[in-house]
Image (tube, rainbow, N blue to C red; front, top):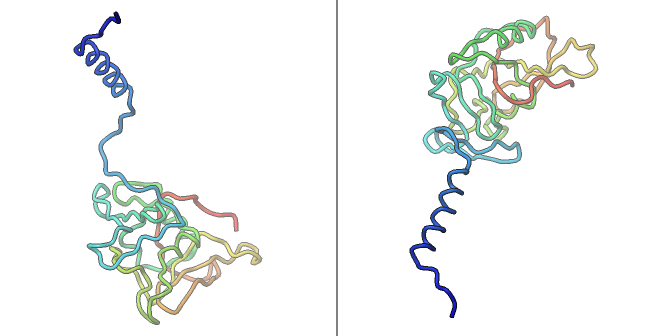
Length: 190
């Protein structure tokens, strides 16, 4: 005759195994949580209330916007004063916005990731549903990317007006706008 294990003993053993497994499980801190950014994803926006791409960061005094498509954090309201490229670099490096430092001038690719090429000529060329303020269409914005072949004296620029595209200008001669960013790769060696 086989010995029988009482049902109560079986439940105690199973409960102990489950509890010990849960006790060793990874714990996390309080959210919010965001999807891992990936440059190959497209988060479509139609209006500000239905846009999964951009999140205004209240923990940064609502002065910054997370782009969930790229993982970059942008100034919600970029500067409206034109400066040379060297001053643009300096201004981002010393910027304290949303009670945070660590800002920098974005690369050409990062800045261009906000440009919407489907926007009509002469309209603000940002994705639908964006929360940004004071983005100017009358001028262009500096990138940190140096144009290859010009003895490091020329940098790429991005205008946010429909029908335009990236351009370039002399770093020390022209004054353009500055839109600082946090996160990402930093300055590229182009």
